[in-house]
Amino acid sequence: MDLSNCKSCGRLMLQSKKYCEKCQNEKDEVYRSVRTFLSNHPGSTLLDVHRELGIAISELLEYVREFSAMPMGGYQTKQSDRKA
Ligand SMILES: [Zn+2]
Image (cartoon, rainbow, N blue to C red; front, side, top):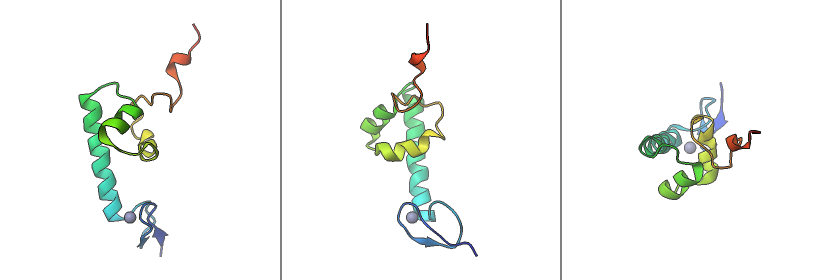
């Protein structure tokens, strides 16, 4: 039997997931609001999302992998860094 603790609230779970159902739902909601924000404000950076939605940077960084299209405003590989 796989036991693990929720990475968010620490609750013990009977499956080896990262988050418990409650936290997963909250995260899904955050995910949705970020996605909606990005579709309404194309080109927003991580800092824009942080300021507008009040989501912690550390939390947003968790989503960076999933929002590969989101410009990170310095938190990711700088695309403006390319050599002319
Ligand atoms: Zn939890």
